[in-house]
Image 1 (cartoon, rainbow, N blue to C red):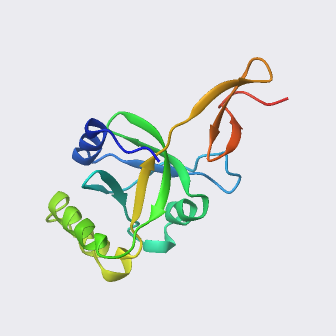
Image 2 (cartoon, rainbow, N blue to C red):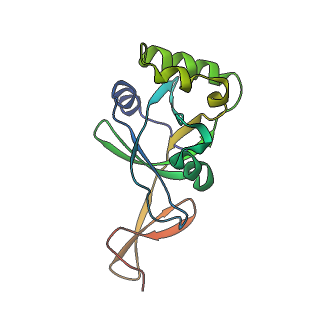
Length: 152
């Protein structure tokens, strides 16, 4: 998997405008963008659901393992991976540093939420023409029509 560029990660980490849209059950359609808090630790981006596993976006991200984020003027196709172990303590520290003095931070750093951290990983998209003029892309091994096109 591809890593974030230093500029991309810095811009996303400094911004407070990340919107996440995991794929819906059909594996093609993006969910409604949901504004969430995010943090960067080392060279990676992480998110947590305020309501843990109950968050709809979180359930979709875990199930579909792919989606899109919009943040800091960027739109990126991404993969989601669960985070476990001591890295969650460092993610807590990053949330505390970025969102200090905000009451919802307490919920995001509770023990139950730690097990709900997701790594957000940019994924490359390979583009090519498919059936003549219909432009498609390949993501996670599946061919999908580009928005506004169809596969005959």
